[in-house]
Length: 181
Image (cartoon, rainbow, N blue to C red; front, side, top):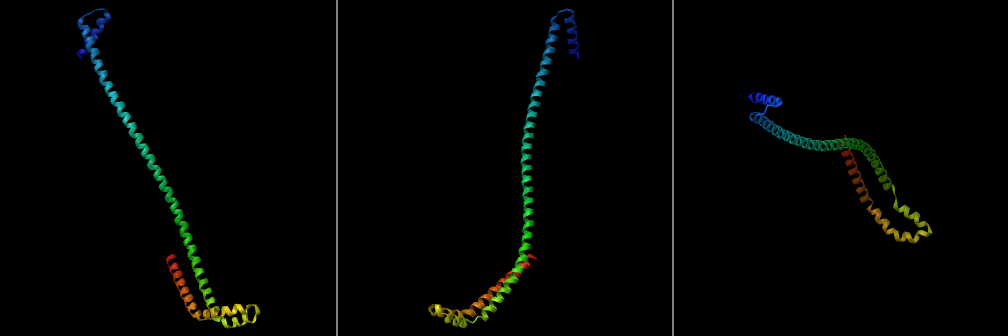
């Protein structure tokens, strides 16, 4: 307070045209004090500017990281949606495949039974006799007769293999139906 009074008095003397060394010293002291305060304020300002720049850098870095996280979340949400669509379509396809497999299994069993019945009725010997009566097939029949006779011998083996294959296919289809249900 005393310094303020002195500076006020010194300024009043300066205005009045009175000059003294004491007045000059008071003005110099006051200017030095103001310069000290100004350098302190400048240092604080520089620190505040530096802190502000650091905060802006941190904000920019956090915003960039947030954009990356948002992009990743968007990609995951999109992948999740595509996965849900794929699962839904796959399950619908599995139901259709199960229905088709059961129908196909029934039809293949019926077809196999008809084929076995036809093979059982087939009389290879009478077919050979019919073919022999035709003049153009005499030579071919002579060459094919041993193979046809062997085929007739293997007919029971073929029937057993077809029956086993039909049973395996039926069991497999039944297993598919159980898994699908």
